[in-house]
Amino acid sequence: MKVVFAMTVGEKIKRIRTFRNMTQKELAAAIGLGENASNRFAQYETNYRVPKKELLTKIAEVLDVNPLVFYDAVSMDASEIMEILFWIDEFNPSAINLFQLEKYPREKANSSDDTAVRYHDNDSWPAHPPVGLWFNYGLINDFLKEWVVRKEELRSGQITKDEYFEWKINWPQTCDDCGKYESRKPWRKMETEKS
Image 1 (tube, one colour):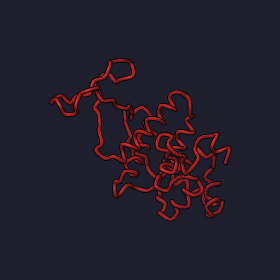
Image 2: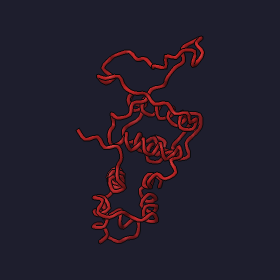
Image 3: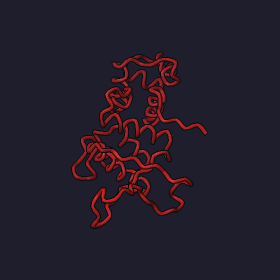
């Protein structure tokens, strides 16, 4: 079984273009390349050619997504780490499982050498014990908490797969800090219809 953890720029363009119900020809025309440029988009989407940064910015604008979606991570700041995780989730939906941890009541942290996190065995967990990952990076923890909420909303049917994808491709403009404030960019279908 091949597990892919990153999508190429071409794969991202194709995924978002088809999500927006656009043809290669329509996208080429919308960014001003003319109708004959659809062949160039076929080359981009098959990774035969890679668009320059300026063109990626235009593509992002036409596709109504955060331009960072297309750029390679260079500084590895919190938003770039989240973009990488989002694309892993998109390409391998069952690869990342998020859950909120809770403290044991009346027990001081690090009071024991036992650092294992325990779980109840059920069909939701893999056959082998999973490995946990903890970030000592407050901003990423805040972002991950909101992602837990979005994944739970998707699982429970409160949001659609399309809304979930919209939230990811326009993140952090779609961030609302777990409902504490309104996001800068509407992403829920009802929010979008009101705009």
